[in-house]
Image 1 (cartoon, rainbow, N blue to C red):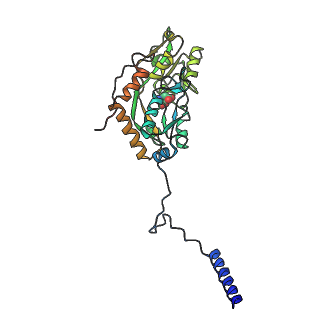
Image 2 (cartoon, rainbow, N blue to C red):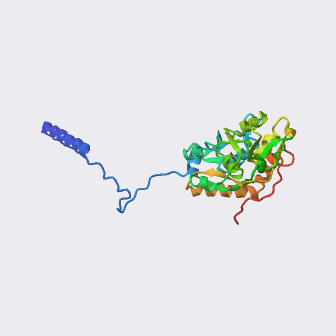
Image 3 (spheres, rainbow, N blue to C red):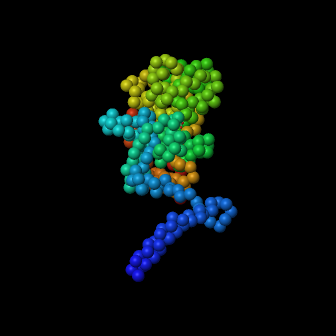
Length: 292
Ligand code: GLU
């Protein structure tokens, strides 16, 4: 009897194991096939990802004084854009990790998901907005020319037939060609390289946003050797670059910028880098967009 029971039990177990192995896989839920159940891909918003990681990954310039550059004393990235990111990270209660970007690679860095935000002297252009999103304008500028002190070039009109230096991937290289189709634009990797070409006489002028020219001149060993000339020939509203279609993150960034303006932090950062007591003084002549 005992033997019979053992055999019966063994048989039941074998059948059970077999049944388990052969159990049909659950039917996959229909995805967008017109059925009732639509399974959306699981996406995690940028803000959740930052909080989970505990780190805000920010793309900034590393050689654009005074927006993003390596401080002599600090031996780390400092500047207006860097401070804006630090404030956003503080508000999120996370650390911040900076990655150097160039004018040519910054948008790709964001779309590849290598950074969560770009604070990189970047003009909000409709063309760029087709690929990424932007915050409200957090800095306002326009394009001018930098020339040697004794240069006779006084405006964009005087650049006809001459070589002018700018930077790859910037609005500056395009704007100057549009404003003066008869000049030859030579584009460099970064602004220090364009400035070096000007010093070496390879170009007769260099051009970009006036604040970047102020930064180059102010941080030069001999600022008095240079002058910024002409009227603005472009409009350069800077926006923070943000991943496309993530309104939660974009709202957070916009609300933070407005908070910074209202609580005086923005002005504090402005004065630190561009105020009267700095080498890069630029009187403030505009206001951030403030939503009531
Ligand atoms: N603001 C301009 C731009 O976004 C020029 C400065 C830069 O190259 O970052 O292209």
